[in-house]
Length: 218
Ligand code: SAH
Image (cartoon, rainbow, N blue to C red; front, side):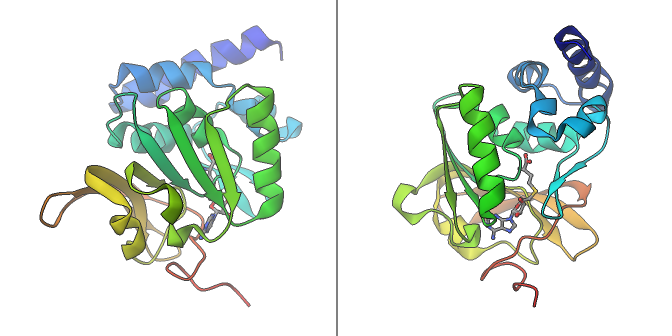
């Protein structure tokens, strides 16, 4: 496939998978027309990179379906000057989409080989406003808190309370919560007093593994 074919595939993806399903935020649509999703995958997956499904990255993990990336990004309601925390760097694709939209992204990945690969491709593409660290993201990133938005791209049994503490008042946390097989995508908005929780629909993610997620498998 030529670079123009990929650009065409991206336009088609945005039209048929995102706009057709109700994604309206122009900035999100523009970012997803721009970020070369295929480069975050092994070359063997490039022909399928813009398909309507998640794909394997390695270490048993997946890059989310484009629609889910768009839905979660839109749910963060970004204006451009935000500081965002991502839990689950994975391939680095979601971080690249965020990089097009906000000032600073802090992203945590628990598997170091994935973090290394993500760093390499983000550097190659010039996404310099993404900082990655390898650790258990269910603890958040205390030194950089508070955040305007937190996006968790792995599914946990519940909302890790530490993450809520690291959110600014008015900040948004987007996270899939449920069991191993299916989850509900939740948006939690921090109010002056308490939280507002919204259900954004069903989804299926790989497990959020950590002290405030699912326990490490033996
Ligand atoms: N956002 C990614 C999708 C990654 S899949 C992308 O755009 O490609 C989910 C990722 O979350 C996996 O890489 C997994 O290793 C990671 N993960 C799971 N539990 C984690 C935790 N407690 N802290 C940090 N990363 C975690």
